[in-house]
Image (cartoon, rainbow, N blue to C red):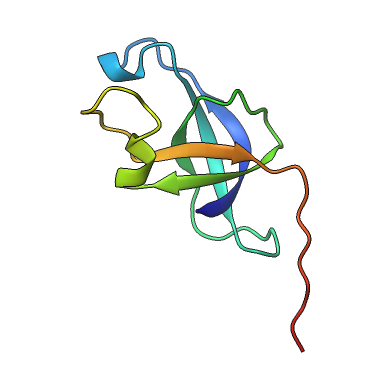
Length: 91
């Protein structure tokens, strides 16, 4: 799983049937120090996260499992909303 921040919403009036009723969000990937890495991507969000929230997401085959329909084109999905992060630095 990867860290990310919700930076926007994606509005789509027409989409594939397996995405009907699902929210699409724009996610900025982050590293473990919550610094931007890579480019933003669109993800399916079944958790109703909001802009500005830190989340964790998954990509690839694992992301498609969040949608109940067996065959779907999901490449990225929000898997959880992060409430707190506690990182202990190793010496």
